[in-house]
Length: 301
Length: 279
Image (cartoon, rainbow over all chains, first blue to last red; front, top):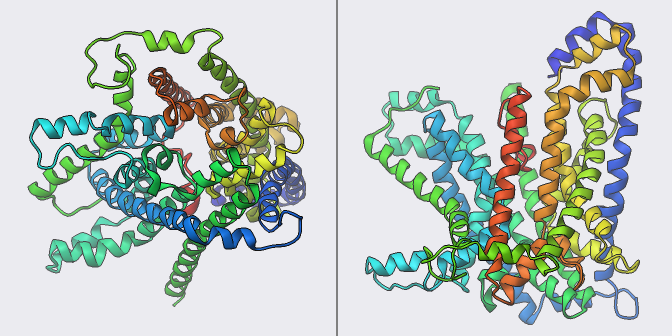
């Protein structure tokens, strides 16, 4: 992109330098609407959440709501949220890796078809997909009818209103993200490196562990953290497919606002979710920065 | 690409696991579509008898479902208009000009895709509650635009970057004014991207739950809010028909975008998930 833009610019130096000042002025004007809109409708309301979480009933500064959020039953909700998010990240990473790896080696027609099946559900309401799982995982649902009809040991299984059900549901919601990230990284792996290792007598397992995994590791990190972050604030599936032990922070915020009028407490939980998200994004950014530095060092010497 | 030769076992193993995972993704959707035509509502699969009863129930004029479908459509239409305005201007700034503070503006645009939506929803609730605008379609649409505009902007940035700037330079060198260039060159070339941005904005709003839930009142509930309540509290089999309609809508929207892009001569693979900027 940059290459094509620079070449003709050299030919008409006088005109483009005038044009450049003009262009950055136009760009500035065009950037105004979205900046103003997001500052008013996105940044300001979140600052409102932050300030409400630090206000007592009389309006004075207090950390009471955080102390409340981090103790007793509330703390266990926080722990379940992190646990369910971690389980979902692990599951969608594992399943996503297997699928992305298979897609990377499929013939183009099948790969395109598979990607279609991965991407299309992402655009279908998560509520609807969760409902599909409720129908399927119920005591007389498809999975249990199949399991009982083949006399699987222990059938029917209880797959709904517990953590198994929640993780199955959230994993299917996060899977498109992990597959897309991993697929992007796997496509970039140079097959000649693997072939070269094989040429030196490395076993398939060694090639996978020593060559392939390190090459796709950045994608694994990104995919895992991304699904973890997205899962933190997501409560459709936990609320509909979970039991009491699967109450997550976001569902609690909903309850406190919609049913209990406990806005300050809800705001404190919101800020905690925000901090967890920033922590995840921070790890992501740090890993990228270190990769960039290592890359610069290698290409510099 | 050169590859390791595939072993037969590896080939079969990969095929089977991929099929199982793809079924895992597709089955909940297929189940809904089939069940929605079952006469007995929720329960047995496959249904013993088929009927369109639940679809009639959903469309019954004056009913909860019809009212919320109308509200959701209005909100989604407003959101689409707002997102296109913000999208066209922001994408021009980010893709074309040499924008000062480019990284800061780009970061601000991406942020709503990564911040927990429930926090955005809570913030908007606190923002609109004191001014008595909860339940207002305009307020819900403004809230939805926070989520839809970034998607529209990303699509339009990639559209604008795909247009050869030299075409605009050539028109300028032949004396075309800026408005003429925008109208005669940039706009026609960007139309597929504009349509894609419009479709994705609409569907983002139509399917959005968190903001709509926090800003709903007993009289104004969008379709997803009503679906959530139906699934959480009362078991109304009409919800299967509603779900099937939402599935059909999403598939139609994606098909429309694919057709428009094909006609526009674009290659597939445009990314509308916030995945690309992160990797």
